[in-house]
Length: 589
Ligand SMILES: *[C@@H]1O[C@H](CO)[C@@H](O)[C@H](O)[C@H]1NC(C)=O
Ligand SMILES: *[C@@H]1O[C@H](CO)[C@@H](O)[C@H](O)[C@H]1NC(C)=O
Image 1 (cartoon, rainbow, N blue to C red):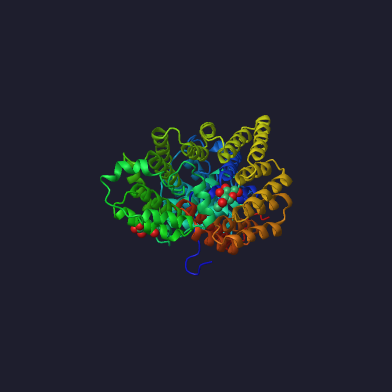
Image 2: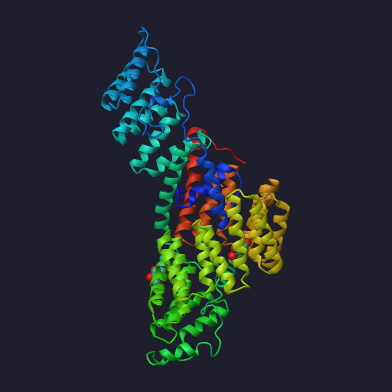
């Protein structure tokens, strides 16, 4: 863990996986699979009662109907136990009577009067009656909350929690007030304690945790991402990225004559370009996998206004995206897209890339717009449909995704990737729709894909995810072995295989060994570090988890991914704090 500032709560997509790790207690599958699992966990969550159990478990059950105000959010009410107002005149009895009066005012919406009564109850109550006293403070906090006096809410809840450390209502109320006061870190700790005390069964506290983790993650990632060193991904990753485009000029080797046609139009305007133009050099470096020099060579082409300016801009933008510099990529992509006379393939490719970038920046509208424009200008480009299909999956628009994959397959019948992804989309749809016969059809579809395209690793990988879901672990394992055979350098597959061992055999050692192997193959595999971190969270090794998450943060390829990792890290950090302060721990593997 970094000595200076340990990890704090995190961001965006963060919670779902965090939640999943703790809530479902099963390992996590990334990529398209993550969306899938996430949705499943959301469904599960929303089935939760949403009702808050009474903290004391003792004397003070909260009666739902006591809270007359139908619009009142759950958890709003003070502890409305009305003891019989008999004679008794001990100080505690008088305190109770004051509280009961306060509760009546509260129910009537007379919060100022309620506060006076609770204050009186607090003054009357013998200090050794901690449970009662904590209830009075908590109730007064509830009244302050109605008046939006957040500082007072925090103060009273602090009193309540001090006397009764596992007082869920007081902790949660304090968490909400701290959020209003923008003390996110403190809020996160309280809400984490609440989640653990409630065994992750209450939707409201889970949602608040999610929200705060996302906000914190976003803030931290924004800051960190700006100042981070750009980093070239592994050659394996780069090749795999380019292979997801088939109708793409810049990723194909230059062929003599191929470029002549379009160049003719430009020859008039473009100045003389020597054959050692920056773009041609960049292409050569690309073939040599000498990726670090590509951006600077493209810059030379662009600055000299060479005949390959459009290509150079697109290639440079692509590498900016690969090293995670979206700010650098965007103006280049904009320029190519606006070059009305450039080759339409270049413009469509730029639109796909800008659309994907917007998606990463969580701007689905802009993203959709770009993909639609790409389809408009280059209607028969299979890449457009393939990538738009992936976008639709992320947006959970499965029917449209399937339509796009189909379009891609029509245009390129040999596109194994599109067929595999279509199967996965159909599978997800069938599975979430609880339709066993459709699930079977999708599974048969996978068999068909791997039979027809035995060299497509992705086909096996996606099939393996579906098989894992269906608890056909042995067969899933075989599929991962095929992937490894086809692409021994792909670290991701080892991570998936490791996760499978955990789920299948609860074999932590084998699982961790495989994930260790992934790191050995590719020490920039952020997925491996993230997964290891998640497993360590589940085992209760929070410090080690934080360490792993920090490694992944330094490798994150986008701000959004980084934000997500910060959330994981902050969630783990909050748990260490809660464990320290309250001796509370979530269930571990
Ligand atoms: C590694 O394999 C996965 C499937 O398991 C695939 O999605 C990914 O693109 C591959 N990555 C690289 C870098 O080849
Ligand atoms: C991204 O690229 C632009 C253009 O080269 C550069 O000015 C900027 O510093 C880069 N940002 C990062 C974070 O590397």
